[in-house]
Image (cartoon, rainbow, N blue to C red; front, side, top):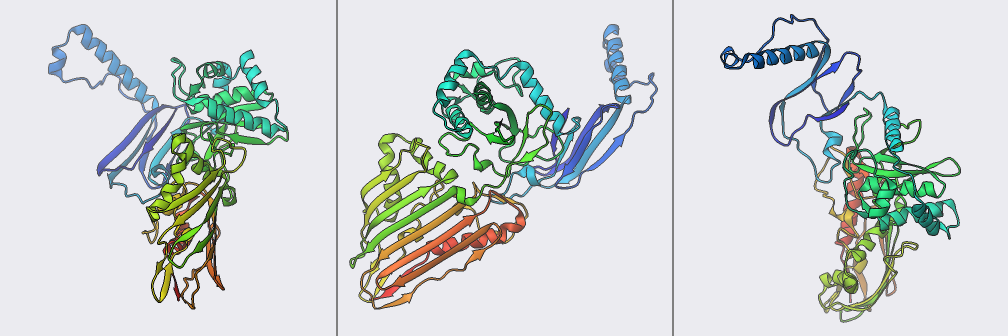
Length: 516
């Protein structure tokens, strides 16, 4: 038995009470997180069985005798049950509406809650999860599954290559769509044979299908449970909403795989799930574990531009974009979730926001469906009236400094609200990330540098920012780097994170003024 009881509310609450009667020989462990809740425990006590509280006498007189006797017996039995059990009670009065913050972690991570469980520890939970699926035969593979598995991995060079091929086959070929198997639905994973035939399922079915195929390929593999979007605390209540897969390598190390979250992703495990707890359903059990921080260098966005600014204010040049990890995946989604006939309009739309008369001369991009290589995009352009040219001055903001690709797809970090001075709660980003910008611009003739913006260097444990303009002769060079170190932050880390992000905003709004 377990329960998760929230003692917070979105509305004013005068009082909330949670009361439970447990057998005396059934240990119950519990803990209150993120606040205080009043509580008491009452142990079993003897009562006078002849004293039974019944319905009011008038109602009783209207009942047939056999009904009244039956009700008396039921109530007496209920009193016997209660009197032989330990009573646990938690209560809280005058609960004020919970006030959140923009971009904060899940409410359950920071708001008051009660967790209780009769499970002794996470090892016991893991053993149960393993047994319920092994007994059901969830991962038995058929000759048809074995045959296809062999075909998928036939050209694989290493064990990691085999695992990757199977992981991405399940990710792409098992459509995310739920089908109930009827009795047994829940923590029992559908049999691999069923998912293989249906070619669809939810996360647990995709995870189970991968376990089945990995076993068909000779690997030791099991399902695991996790909680996408919020923290799992240490009392072993079922704080899970997602199922994934673990496989053991020949060196004895376990690796995490997620066929639900990696369609179109070059990773085997989505780093949008970093700093997330999980429980492996392996024989002998496992303790609760946490996925590590994924270095921002694994999720880079690199943008470079070679351009020339002409005397009439027109800018011509070429932008090159490369990406990796979750940034790579975000760019691919822009393509693969659109009709192919619209692909050539995706990138020009960004420049059209700057100037509707922008002219895209050529676009080249690697195949968005080919995840074997990082995405690469090349875009040649011409933007009229990019700079303001007067008789005395040349006024402009470099193209990549402005960042025309500032939508949620390529620049989700720019949508984090920086209006808060301090934070009460932790906050989160989409993923760790490294943004690198380099722009080389050939300038028209000018006499002097009137205004060249400067920026503060931020360098903290998790976040950093640096940017510098250099003008030599008639060439301008911009080099900038913004590093976001992880996905989930503590409230006290907000100052450094915000400082780096604000300097990035300053870069986007920077204006260069040259005297003619």
